[in-house]
Figure 1 (cartoon, one colour):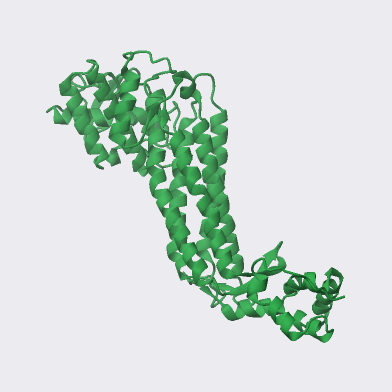
Figure 2 (cartoon, rainbow, N blue to C red; figure 1 turned 90 degrees about the vertical axis):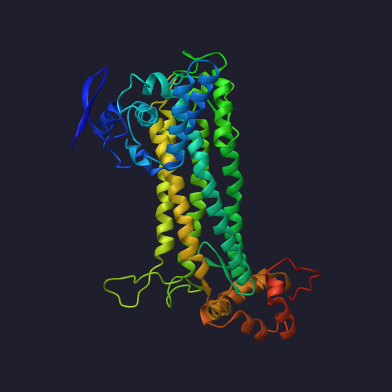
Length: 471
């Protein structure tokens, strides 16, 4: 492989001659072979880094700290990257030492070399335009990296919210489709009282929808950034007007309402907004996982379980048991939820590990947040398209289980009394008779009364009027 020689404070090093990155990126690639997940795995982060560099260059030029020729080349290079070019050159592992310095330098070097080409120079000819002196001017990793992270998370949140809303719509549609399917509700895996399958699915939809607003609220907190604070928030090596101007340009370029943090020293060390956002992802994952558990239970069997719904068959379920089809889609959703919950713990621990004016564990925080969103988006899309849309109700099974259950006795308690109801329930359990048969046999209610009280209209919503209790 042909190489070129670049130099940094540690000495000379060979870099692939065709690489758009430079020596510091090369060192990071060699040092941090940890996850195998490079920056390019998250295009939102690559775009966000380019936008930060654009905003910084424009602000520096406006303030007379970067000439128009260099500024134009940097802006053009960043626009190319935002359009999707050279993302494969962002090669550094997401998990790295140095509080994100390697990620920042990967961006600086790619942008510098692309800008050099636009100026008619070769890669590595940094005397004409330098990764640190020009692309990174008025910045530190400690403000550029977290600012890009805040932006990247918002970019990733937009499609995640769309995917969640689509899943919610699919669940609501099933709620309407199953509105007339009466079944037995359960608490603690025991028969409780009747409900409809539609109510169950509509509850899934409402439960997930609660987190849409929470995600949007958390995104709003991520609009407050420390760009312009440089190393520790004091703004060393910047023009007095730079921070406000750079953030203004960042808002303009990104389309997000970015604002400068009120206290840049505090904002440079604080990871609170990331922790909050991670907590919302965890909360959603818990709800999604619980729903997946319910789908597995409701579809269990097909003959020796609940069997109230039929999941669309996706693949054979066993290498030894013929005919077995497993609920593989909900199972994959469960595992996604567990991983997101684990990611949240990693974010929490990393945020707590901050020391003094900086948190060196930011790369772990960013990696886990972006990974959680990517996984949740994929899981929601998979669940909707390969499971929810194809679910069918087994109406006969639902009716059978409802008829056999003693749970319907609850609807009769106000009319025959708790003691009578308890006795009827116990007798039904021991004899195999139905609640309806025993109540009629004892003359506690007549056929017409029983028909009315055990009708869906009476059992599925508030209906109690004047009580004429039988003793």
